[in-house]
Image 1: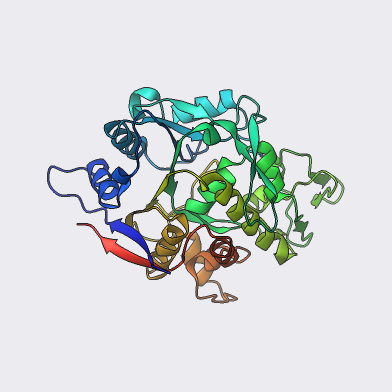
Image 2: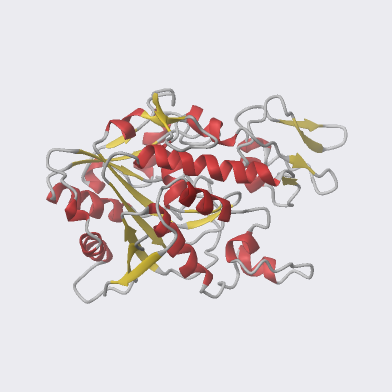
Length: 376
């Protein structure tokens, strides 16, 4: 099989050329002009960031992508689906206000912002997963599937469960409706170690499904397995590492489902993918905060192959030195530190991403073999 092409450029800007312009050059060098966009609806899928988080991509990059689509005759719109957990993006009204407050308005990005799964996250469509092993039909936000062309614009960063968030996560998990996100998360339930729980209740504020129960007498938290949907938000909220998935297969199954959802989104229509390795926070942009970056800013990557894109970004990140005063460097300084020789797994020891990449290749999303082409 021929290697996929992944195009890369760093964040060095020439005098007189800003980074949005450089991103446009990267997209064109990667071949986006090969896509016939004339009078086509073009979904640009991204994460607008939770309120309180400042690690998400700046709107300037989104405008650069929309500008290229307009130049090619397309009708672009920025889009995302509502979240399963509580926060500022769980319905379309709050989601839009969040996007606007974070700078994503039609005026700033040059195109409409549409929440793909509707007002309450129920406007989805069942999309068959060809070759799927875990998912027969993926529940995808309708506006995403109504688009003629799909573009993903990703902030490449760490993630407390899936190891990192890149193209496949942005496409698969991000394009799932609220029911689709629940479908991907359902297989595993976390456990709480009472000896580590300090009774702060921070995890409880992240749970949207009454999946946690606090005992006032013991000042300890426990999981209500009947209500818990296994989304893992409580894990990222816990500062004492008291909560974890004991069954590793649940993380692997989540990764596989995420890959299959991504395949449902991109199959059968033109698609193009961009990842920016910048402000590499340890956790997802869905958090209402962002920690210090764990790795240096590397640059911008683009490809027609989302799997090759993720693999190239991971490989580039693993070659870097951890940044000081970060979650990663703090973990590495601990006396009981067990080196997994992987920056993302060393940042969050319960995280795992290799099963996602392996499964994505198995079901035919793309190739993990790639040729990296550098654009100055």
